[in-house]
Image 1 (cartoon, rainbow, N blue to C red):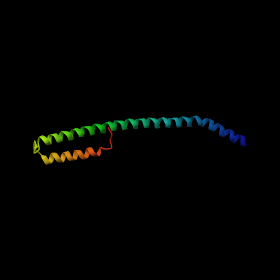
Image 2: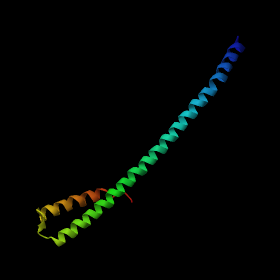
Image 3: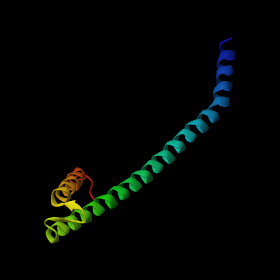
Image 4: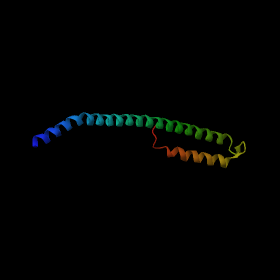
Amino acid sequence: MMASAHNKFSRVTTFAFPYVLILVTAMFALTLVTSLNAKDQADTNHAALCAFKVDLAARIDQGQQFLRKHPEGAFGFSAAQIKLQLENQQRTYRSFSSVDC
């Protein structure tokens, strides 16, 4: 009786092992692909943040140059409005301090 139970367990194990191995391999492959996709997405996001940071720095520089050329403001914008916009852009730029480009 004991040999019969052991024999039955052995047959079930032999039958189930390849399926379990396939399942574990598929789960590993899926995890690997997901991880690689996440890395690609992170790289894309980093590039976009860097592009925004560079653009923002250029806008700040241009705004400061504009304000030096037009200390009283221009085109319907007062100097105070331009300064406020520059302060907001500088604050946004500082918030990107942790983004290394």
